[in-house]
Image 1 (cartoon, rainbow, N blue to C red):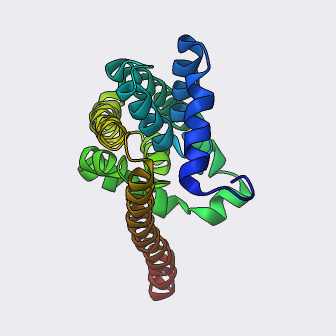
Image 2 (cartoon, rainbow, N blue to C red):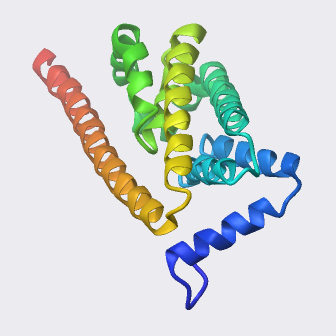
Length: 219
């Protein structure tokens, strides 16, 4: 944030800067922002679509095209990340560091989980920060089928970005209220991500030690 300015004032400056760009460039910025989270999760991809919604309400951009370019870029890069994980992911866990992170029996359990619950898990994960990036990666590592991964991912992403566009359009005339809603939404999603990370950490710890205890019993 620029020193001496409030969040609404900063957002208005961002809106003005984006609105001053050529229309094609503005769409490219939104697409790049939506795609980037697949490589760097802290990127606030949702904000790009919300800003696009505000500009659509103000007649600068087309709302449908905002959703289409954001959705297309996000799903395309997510699919490429999934394919890379499917092709090379297992090899990573054959290394010393990868073997410490997830042992072979844990990878087998993970593959079993994805085989049974992969589709709904991918769908739900698209609404949770960080996990929307991690879940497709492990879908690839677990060998989940392409369409079983991309269809729920694409459907959930379309729903989410449509909601973000609606939020931007609905609150475009009241930026302070928009800022408040986005901050509240981010807090709620962060809480959901923390719970999900805690559950994943518990699973990692339990399966790791369960296998150790099982080997001790066999001796």
